Image (cartoon, rainbow, N blue to C red; front, side):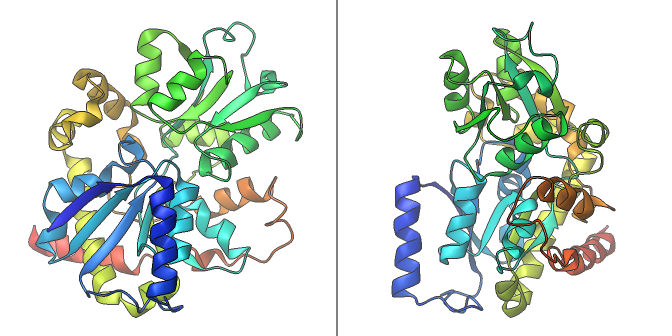
Length: 350
């Protein structure tokens, strides 16, 4: 059995505090009450970049593995990360780059299943500024939207503008979430440009309210924008929890790798049919179009792309003072052990 819930940031904070106090969560995460009950928080459940986590539930793959998975929704990846650190959840569906950022602070998490090999993000510029903003260098003096301060969209935005010559203080960042809140912020002139994902991208392009400035929905366009592959969406977990719950972690990997195989072997329309109808935002055709254009971002097997961690480290260390000068062991920011085992099971089943 699996369940999907939406929690407000305040409710999640209470949940984290309660977990820390009432359960006295240890470093190994031994407070998990039921062996096969796993709570995973997603930094924006309706975002297509995080689609595999919900699709696995819709396909019945968690249940097939004997897992009781609860999916929680929150606005941004940085909020999801905080819930993991508070001990309120066992896993996060968010960007891999958090594992590098946290290791620099002495906290170890790892990508267990790598969903994507590209961010799936686009820097949109408001149609009001499209004539004067032709590259990130033209964003000087502008306010730029990100899902949340400290989020992966924050990281990527800072790198894009710095790579194009802007210095800190020459632009401003504003956390505006995604979907309707992002759209409202741009419509109301709170932001001149912003980073977002499908289906928000397709919605704004259709209305003509925004244009694409930088596209990072495919491996090829990502290399052009960032200088290398950028593994992004993943299931990441505390290393201590993974080490203490290898059987449960393997079952999760089995379900998610099977889901990624489904994505690789089915059309965008077939995948959309499996997703909750409210994720379409009232326009199924537009949802399918966005998914078709960005489907190449997903890995077919959950493995970390070659040279991906190095690119992410290069991006983060270019502007984050907390990482600069620190010795980061990239081999401890991800593991392929579980997805390799899952691949063998899928191969045997086929």
